[in-house]
Image 1 (cartoon, rainbow, N blue to C red):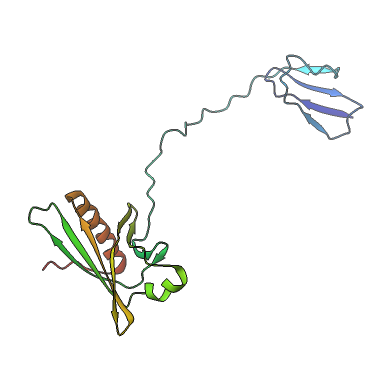
Image 2 (image 1 turned 90 degrees about the vertical axis):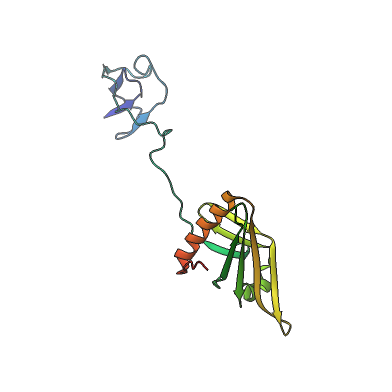
Length: 181
């Protein structure tokens, strides 16, 4: 029987009869010989090197990757608030600062706060990142939680613009509209 012994050298492949190998077995060697395998006496066939097409470098970006995140408001990190708030915006005349006041009536955080954890702040999450405030107060009626009021203070036009981008995404996702008073 004949056996095939392959060497990954572009210079030579060997094909020879060998009684030491079982029929149908191919032996692959990762050594790079300059001549046929020394234990094989047989016919040596020279071939040309295999030419592969040049591959494009993957170090160059092909396009922009945009990760879409559903805009959400959270009081406990990882737990989205399901109640849609009333939001009141105020801005200074010169546009240097502003305040957003969020009012949540019967927020869902009261349903899960005893199980999941404590309210740690107001977190506004979208594809650009997280805006946060620790100015959060709960409102109680007859000893029971009735609502939450949170304030987010913007101290620069850049922070105002970032907040407005969040609110545009949040309002589009939740069917809200902006009414100027």
